[in-house]
Length: 519
Image 1 (cartoon, rainbow, N blue to C red):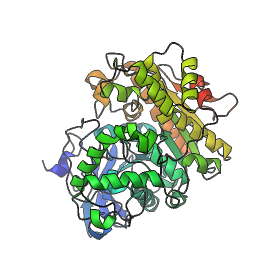
Image 2 (cartoon, rainbow, N blue to C red; image 1 turned 180 degrees about the vertical axis):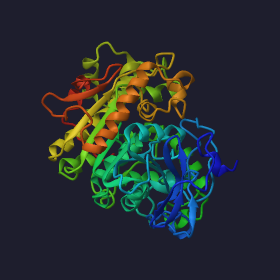
Image 3 (cartoon, rainbow, N blue to C red; image 1 turned 120 degrees about the horizontal axis):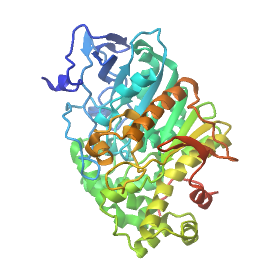
Image 4 (cartoon, rainbow, N blue to C red; image 1 turned 90 degrees about the vertical axis):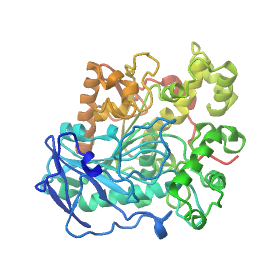
């Protein structure tokens, strides 16, 4: 079997009678797989190499004849894996990084099904649309929807701020993919007037940015943001980090100088600096301990303001928003870094002062709000709140302030990881949503990659709610308001109740999430 064919589901063999769809760039042939038509590796932009490296994406190169869309496109250059872990799955190599993949019940232009466009996470430096954990067959089939996944440039290629290059190139890639969807998705059975972007972690941060970006307006009708990170960089911070990133590669932070460097060498330079970042707190403040030197940059052009400011001003009032987070977001990072049982009172105190609003006053507020929490519990709670929970809730509140509407959820069901240590941690929602319990981080969360009955019930709930929201703007529970604060609580028995993290919400009340500064 060829590398191309190995990307198909087991038992599927490329067939000259597979479905054919004509796109603006040329015809593509997909596969029929378990009742769906699946198309992989369709270019939505030209390879961003040579003179196009570090530039805004350009239209895809057209082709003659019928292109076989059997294999995922090559992932963009990136680090070796999440905290050193990566799935050993073979993927093509090459520079055609900017591709989309489509799962559709029927590529009939008259079907006009809702479209869900997945933007993957990975700290803006990892991941791709062909990850096994993002296999959309179950979601597309259960939701009777067209699902699209995509690649975008990461790390040094997509998010570092170079002189002579536009900021936020990874976000511009996402815009180009959404333009491709608008132009072509009807041929795959999708309705371009009912496009919903959905994503988790860095993908949710990307969606928050897209809501604020003038270039993205009109490209989607609804948005689902799962665990929105609050780490948007100011231009000053991004430029300072870029200087150190380029220095790791022995270059200056200019597109002209860096375009001569092999992309993989740049990736290694980014990984090296990331490991050093915790020592840079005096310069880079709250960004330093994250060990992630990449994030959307509030540059005043591609991204004019932070998402919270833009939404509060009404930038997305016409877009339906669904947003939420997991109860124990930071627990995943705590466990994977081997920190349980190693957080001292001193380290907890330093972390509280760094991240809690108001510094020492915020640290005191956390100790008062969580009197039974030890140093590890406080260390975890404040980082869960600062990094994901409160930014997610605040995005909903900003949408309301700007005249829009939002639905909110919180995942409180703990992962059945066998040890009881992970709880409702970061990324647990991905295998639950896609039904991919044995892929990517799934085996860490579900021993043996096997779901429990509770997990299967949650998956059924999500695979109904997300497509329902994409179809009508109503996921099945009340819209959020700032009086009763109704939230869909995703537990063993999903139910609607007041926002569960009231103690944290009160601590952060009135805090404005701005672009992280250079100190």
